[in-house]
Image (cartoon, rainbow, N blue to C red; front, top):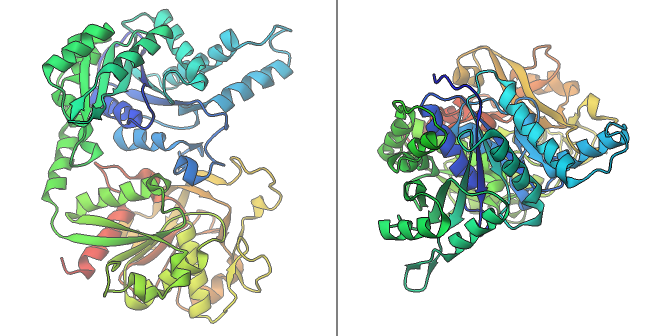
Length: 545
C-alpha cells in the first residue's frame, strides 16, 4: 500500500448534457486506483431535493439501490459497488434534500446563534463536512472520489461545485483535483465537434474550477490533432485529455480502455502519488470470460417497469455477471406483466413464437398493477419445468400461485393487493402496521438468513449462514406455514430467530426458487452472485448446453 500523508480528493463533474456516463467513469477510475494498491472511497452528490431515492418512481429515476446499512440510494452507488471494493453506505450518498434538512434542523435548534443562514457558507460547509466525514470514516482511506450529479450550468449543482472549489483551494491542487467529463458530438458527415467541450470547461472555470483532467465522451477514439486542439482551448495538459469512446463489448471494459490511455498514471501524477505496478488481472480475466461465452439462453424478465432499462439495472447486470461465470450469453426478454393478463401465457412465453424463453425471473416491485400476469408466469414456469427465480415480490408471487393452484385457495393474495382476502398468504410486517411515512421506513439493509441443508439455496451458497439486503414491507404469512409446507412447498431459509421466511422452493422442479431479499445488490462482474450463477446454470442444464 501507499504511504499517503493525507487524503486525496478527486471531483468528477459533467458538462454539455446528462447521461454521459459520469458514474461509470468515476467507478472505472476507482477500479484503476484500487488496481494500483490505493484504498478508494466513493461519494455521489445528487442535486435533487428528495432526501433519498426511496420514494422516487422507477420510471423517473431508475432503480433504488440499497446498501448494507439500509440507505436507499441512486443507482450510481450500484455502479460504485460493482466496480470497486470500498465500503458504501448512507454517508456515501449526499443529496440537496439531506443538506438543507440538516442545516434547517440545526437552525431550529439554535445552533447558529441567530446568524442569517446562507448557501455560502452554511450549505457549502455542510456539503464539505459530509465529504470529509467519508474521508475520515475509514483510517486507511487514501482517495475519495466525489461524483457531482447533474451538469455544470445547472442551478441546482452550484452549491456542490462551490464546495468542490473550496476543498480544492483548501487542500491544494496536489491533494484535490478536478476530472471533467464532456461530450464530443458527431454531426452530419461524421464530423466531431469540440466546441461543446470548450464551452463546458469555460463554465467550470466560471465556477472557479480549472479541470485537471478531461474525459471526452465520443463515439470513436479522438486523434492526436483533436486532443491537442482541446488542450489548447481548455488549459488542460495534452497528456490529461482522455477519450471514453463507444465500446462494442460491455461497460466493464471501460477500466481497461482508460488503463490503455494511462488515465490512472496521469491522475497519480497530478496528485503527487508514486506510481506502482497495476494489478488488473480480475478485469482482464472477466473480459476473457466475456469473449469465451458459447450458446445463448433467453431469460424472460416479467416485471412492472419494463420501458426503462435502469428500473431493474442491478438485476440485468447480475444476470450478465452470471453469464460470464457460466460461459453462456444471456439474452434479456423484457415482458410487461400486464400483457400476460390480457393474452394467453403460452402465446407469449411458449416455444412456438419470438417470445420463447428458457428461464423466468420476476423482480421486485410495488402495487397491484400486473400482479395477475406475474402469477400466470409463475404457474407456467412451475408446470412446464422452466427455471424460475423470484426476487422479493417475485417470491411472494410464488407463494400466491402455490396457494391458489395447489391448495386451491382461489382468493389467496397479499394484503398489499387485496386487504379483504380470506387467505392473506402475504401480509404486512408487524412493525409496519403503524407506519405512515413512506421514506426509509421499510425493512431495509443487511440481514442474516439461516439456510436449510439439502435445499437448492444451500447448494447455491455452500454455507449455512448468509447476509443479504432487504427492501420490503410485506412477508410470507406465518399463519400459513404449516399448510404451505404440508402441501409440499419448501421453506429454504429463515431469519436467525426463525420468525420470518426468507426463501421458498418448488419441490421436484429443476430450479424454482424465490427469495425475500435482493441478491442483485451484491453481484459484481468479477464475482457473480451465487444465486444468479445457480439460476443460469439450471437454465444451461435445461437447454443441454
